[in-house]
Length: 188
Image 1 (spheres, one colour):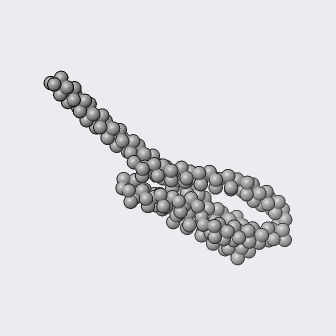
Image 2: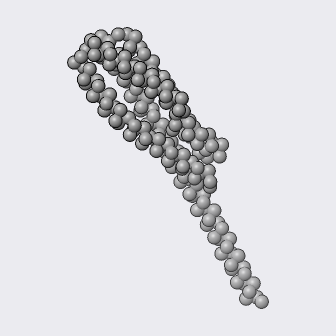
């Protein structure tokens, strides 16, 4: 009987040790997931911040380099690009200092990532319509007054239309990956 008690206490001690080991391992994995989510969200924030800075530089450069263009066309292009810059900065602000410690913070981050990763259909259509109108106005002006730069601008727009969707898909995939990592962290 005493032998069974010894075996029983030894098994209970091993079970207790295994439970502690599992708890430590689970805590370690959670910390790794938290660091990965925080690092990935900061990376996406920096990428979007770089995009916003690039658009601001584009606005400034277009105003300085294209002074012979009509002021109304430059103003419309500036307003359009400025609207996109503000939208980028507002939608990605929550990625700057992501709260990965609390469940509420993770839920908020996940919702923000989902909003940032996909524009609504109405917003995409609005952006495409405005961009198309501005491009047509720009090409009409170039064709009438600066034919030598018409071809270069047309080639640039065609190149951008090929690279743009690829870049958008890649960025959307990064947002989806971050969302999956947040979901995994929420499961723990």
